[in-house]
Length: 82
Image 1 (cartoon, rainbow, N blue to C red):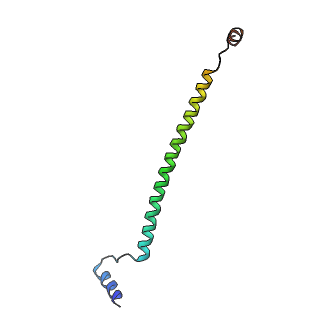
Image 2: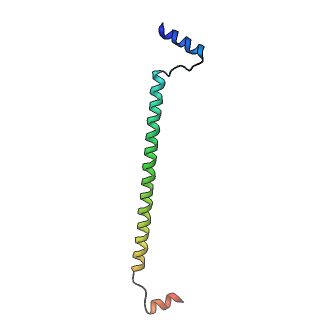
Image 3: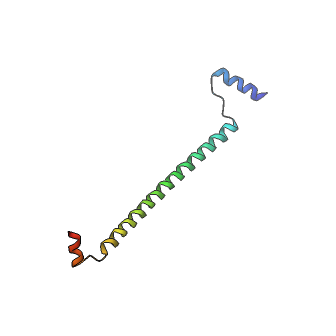
């Protein structure tokens, strides 16, 4: 009875009613989920950056190994230039 009377007075004075337990719980769940999404998103971004760096390093190593190969000499060099 007392809560019913409280709700009637709040509507008379134009004040918003206090949030219900379910509303508070859902709000908390949404905030927790939003934080988790942000954390996972940043982890994915970091992982992608590390992956790109590894790919670039592998490409540099491949180019380095390619440059260290023996160069053609003599007749083979003359044949390639023609």
